[in-house]
Image (cartoon, rainbow, N blue to C red; front, side, top):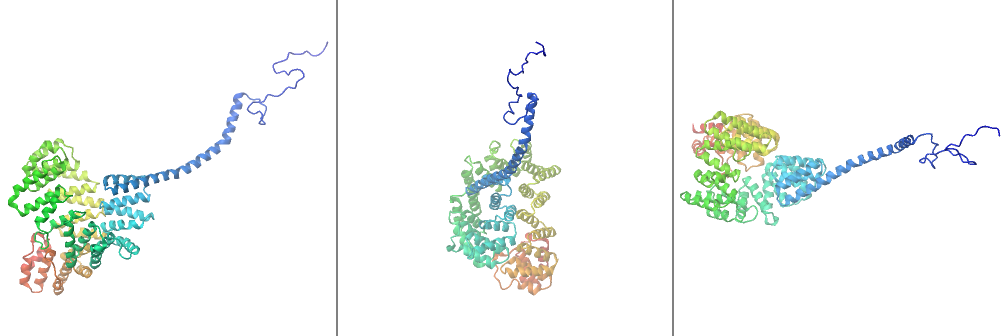
Length: 609
């Protein structure tokens, strides 16, 4: 049979009578896939590329949307955490757990610095702590956030008053009065009284304070105590009598503010006609349920003043009362009290070296006793041995004093310089250094520390006033005047500062017309103020208006305790200028010259010539 040869069927040959079908990749079968001329690996790669091309834009969009949504969610979470921490701080404030409250308040603010609740709690904490200038920054921030609530205005006003921002305090108090036309709560009335007194409106201040003392006001003891203090600052005879009655009633009670009232009564001159008897004060202090060791020591001080012949007995009783237990704080108070009485040997008996390591207060009391006995070499050895870990600033201060007492001037100066460097950047430490350096006779260091504190926190009223007090005790009137003017630039509406500036200008013979005009206006605003009258009298005398100078002191009753050495010196000079030589000499002889400034002594010398 002829024909073409037939090859054997291959593996792909179709069975006889059947049509050959193309091979299709299983992944494309049923999907309109194309016939495969590719290997398995190539088809897998093609599938991956198609998947990525289809899903990558979708996943990218999801990620972008997630990121955009996550940021507000993160912020919301931080805000919630901040609010929770702020609420915890408020609860701790209510329990008077101040260190813990400050920690949680700070946590809240760090979590979210523009969260109103966090800002509010920091403002309130600082206001309660008396750090008015710091608190004011937070109150301003809360105002800028638009979150200031009606109940915030009271603390805002208190902080503004504490920082010397009289106008700002007035704005908040005006809003309070608008919301409560009758005057509001006793605390609102108290703020209004304090503001009126600082703003030079004594009549309004007295009116608000007397409303608080009215039994119908149902004011709390601390509010009544503060209102009485306002009345005492006004030099009004009626207000003073009301204030003394209120304070003595508080002193005889055992509730809040009773100890503060007792201490006020203790500080009054013993010869005051309306002062409580010493025996009653001693009993009230010794038996008060809230009395601390320091109050009991004050009672013993009163006994010592009244009966100096019983000194040994009273000191022995103090040691028996506070020196036999294990209370390190009470023992430290007693040791400090004994050192104040120059009973250094008794302190060393109570606080041997082994017991001194119980607390830094005991350790330092022992150092003071050794120093009182002139054993400064021992103090130096103890400090340099570093057997007890003291604060580096305290270590440097005590070493500086020890070296100074031992005559090592260069070493002492180096230690004071190191102490100043250690305290830099911390206003509280700078003020501590200033107090100790001043007490130790290191006045340059004290002044440098005070100026550093003021530079660090220029709006801090306590720091500025501490520097003012320091300079007022030094003879350089020009430097004192510069400090007054620096403070007046910060608090231009502060009446006491205005008066101080006018008085020092008149005393130095500068800008006399302006000084007289300022003093005259201040005197009109507050006729009962002896400092304002004294300033106007001095300015008039410097201008040759002698009759006006003397007329300032006539027609008014000035309580004996209200007279200051400066006021008596100016009064004596006014008497002499108007021809009342005998009366002028008699007045001049009553003036303690040691408490006068150099220019005031010159004024007094002109009277005695």
